[in-house]
Image (cartoon, rainbow, N blue to C red):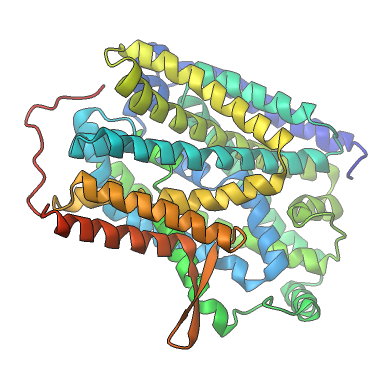
Length: 501
């Protein structure tokens, strides 16, 4: 109950939160091959030693976040079938992972690269392009971390706790054990987080419909609610929604593994084969996501009274389950914020350390010095995200996260194209990045920070994901600049560049 503490639920919540806190601090000695603080590879990438099992939980844990568990059912509750675009998006992303990520891992592993910007610099020897990729990664990550706080805040409110202190305390604890153990902390906690989420969702999709009259009653209630609401909502997509739905799915899939946190999980893998195996088995998370999305329809059948669409999942569990299981579910969601938030802060810290501090401030920094800088920056990033969410409107974080998706997609050509051919050079890729970033930002703001843009062509209107439009402009400009300057010769790479680590 909001505003009145549910002591049973709170007790269960605190037990599991304490459990993962202990695991987080203990992780510094888990699978350790030396001092975690002695090298950025150890602190920021877990020693590059994670096999298929650990990588599966880590990548899944930082890809499917607390905000996913809150926001996807909320979107389905609000708009119906259109909210399910996340399912084809996560189906499309795994062939991309299978095809691209093993090549990227090999490029990083061969030269000791820690970030995507490292790989870009190693291939193109362009500091401006490296900085562009690093800056985009950090900017796109900050609001993403803030949204994990939003997800955690929703369940803390559902427990009856008020004020900002509980949220701040949770993030301080997260900051401390991430500082101590680095990537090993979220990797270890991801085991518990994913197991709890699976239990919660599987129990919910079986028991909730049985208490609401079955799935027939659930879909009937949702259909009636959407019919009463009118507009573009419904159990099925309207023809006008086909193109935006498909373009959102494709654009999101291309962007998903350009984020620093998802790439951190990739670079921490033991081998390229580990990544391929994960690409085969990670679709199990898509099944989970589809079941999570159905909670949005169930909320209509439960006739919940909500202050915000984001309250859908907590309100459903508070209304239909005993307090102890509601506390378990809320703990699963909150822990689901800790894992990705930790990996996101580590990814951003790695970018700052390698592609700003080492590149411009202290080129001769030692491996231990790199690790020390990254640990401090990870704290700063978390504090920044906390301040962001405490003192700025939540809608601002949502808007910036939407822009973050548009921005991170513009790094795709620089990061990926060089893995398959050497025809592009840094001036062309940098020009494309500038046009894609500026054009995508302008379109998004012109549309009121919406994810799609409507174009009128030959008398017809076509609505497409803004990030995909910006990416097309990015690639076209890169090709034109390449041709105009005659930069069609294969990229020459120094024979003895040596590792950056």
